[in-house]
Image (cartoon, helix red, strand yellow):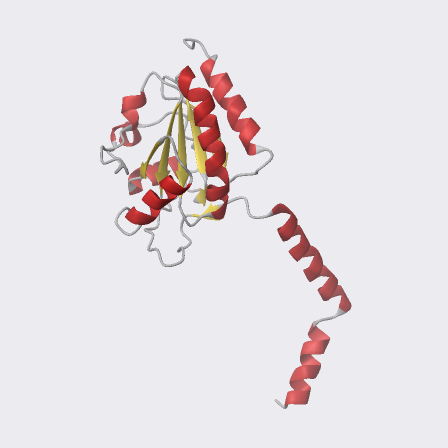
Length: 212
């Protein structure tokens, strides 16, 4: 194809309607931003093991199963993170990754929430979906950079799969009652809407029967 024909074809493709549509779409993306990442997407320079799991039709996780409770997840502190050890407390479990933009935006909010609710018995655990060996230094640097004041580690693959129930978008946060029930699940992060919703969910969990 000659250069003149190529140029003519490109001009015909970019009709006024297509140009307007493209500008509108790009504008919406810029206005609202990306609220979640896919944990299966390979991050730059970091190898991540896939954590996708098929969701069984008609099933919804309402309790933390023994597989999740008893799993020993690697922690940045060195001591394994076992969710069963938080039995009897209100718990927020967060699935995230260092390369995920919305996760980075959400982290300061989680730090603030933990400072506010820690004295009332709320615990927080953040489990990265990244490979613990490949991302060891990256995650530790992240913890220091964001001054994270709650437990941080890496989700074992079966733990991430079970909690995600086939939805691999991150971040994901789970509000867990004292008896292990999943009271609320958040997928993605919205800077204005998610923080107050997380706060309300924690307040509701604290005033449940048996709460303080």
